[in-house]
Amino acid sequence: MIFDRSTLDEQSFLRDLRSTVGDDVLIAEYTDFRTSTSTRRVELAGSNMSQIDRVVRFVKNVRFHEPVQAAFLTAALSAVPLVASLRPLIFSAGATSAAAVSYLFLGYRRLSFLFAPLSVLVGIPLLYYGLVKKTFDWGGRTYRQESKFEVKVVD
Image (cartoon, rainbow, N blue to C red; front, side):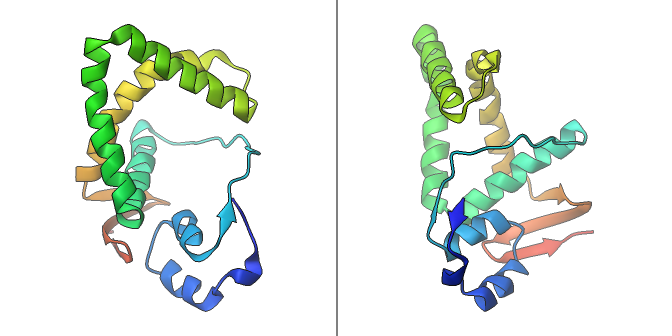
């Protein structure tokens, strides 16, 4: 994301930053920004559970900061298994094509887009898990996010 720092109400931003774990989501609320098409590779260390906690944190951020989009996404993804079972070839072709176009747009030259149908199907239980899980680990601490700006350190 690219934004003009002079448009940022820094005092309010810092106040709210102290009560959230979604700094990236929060900056989007405080600035007019545009998405950058440049990407960089980021290595994610940790156990499988720490990777799942990243998803939980993301789902919580979207749920509390963008509730309408979260509800729409949840409803839309709930229909995916039905489409996948009734029209598996259409589902597979659609998911693979969408991933291939995304990879081309972002400049990725690898064949992992072929796993898109499986990734979509695995992502659905992760979405639900993120919605129902009460806590998540992040940065060596366990958090409970109860609303947009109500985040508690559990331990």
